[in-house]
Length: 86
Ligand SMILES: [Zn+2]
Image 1 (tube, protein in one colour):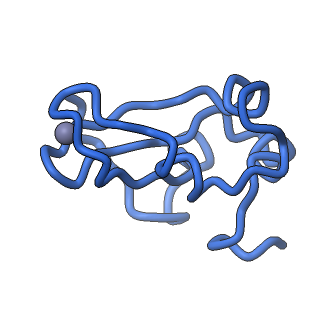
Image 2: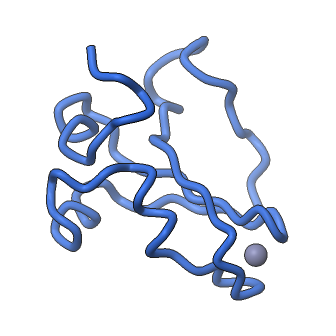
Image 3: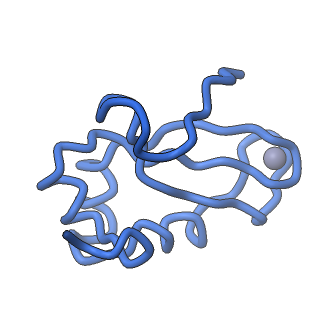
């Protein structure tokens, strides 16, 4: 099992995680980016955490952005869920 902190997009494709969740620390806006789209763009060996560094908030323009795998469809108890939809 891969270290969750060192996850790469490739790991998500293999784990059948369809999306990467990205959110803004400045205004709380968040959204989902398709894993396969990210692989096309950045390559499969790109770190999930690195996605945030390439993003800018669509709402406020902040670069204080975080990213992590969207485990929503992987069953309960994996990580804390974000149910707040904007
Ligand atoms: Zn924002």
